[in-house]
Picture (cartoon, one colour):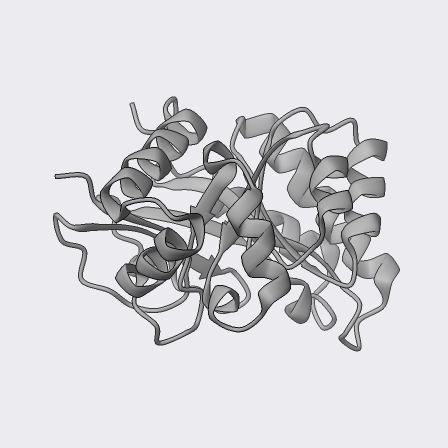
Length: 224
């Protein structure tokens, strides 16, 4: 049976045969002993928490965690224009994540609030050549096209219950470029898939199989 893939969650779940999840590690608060090497993780320094931490400490912790085999993606990381953290400091830490992902050959999970153009500019300046997963994507078609320069996947969560704009975008977006997540919400990943299947007018089982193919395409080397 093809499992549901929950590509990005901060919640604690008991993994079963029906659900495979990638737990996000917020590196400003992590305790290494809590990492279970038999599970999948992403790890990064969220832009909300860079303000009171120096670059050297962030770099040391980031490199320590992301080198672990069970950490299959870098992030979430990025730029958030809705918070009281200097943009230049956020950009500096984002560059650190980009370089780490490039060195390790792991995908980046992107956090962006009112900052897709900033994200694209920094990726271009860094000549990034890897894979992107934009978590909780809420952009538009123009931005989808701009991100098509990269190997980009768009992850959707609770927003697909809330607005017609994002529902229409999901409906028309290639299923070969989509993923799903619960993030911090209490909505189950099964309900998110069900709603997405309704929007895309496709059977849930077919959607699960396509997302599994996407997952394997992104992470195949890391899962060996």
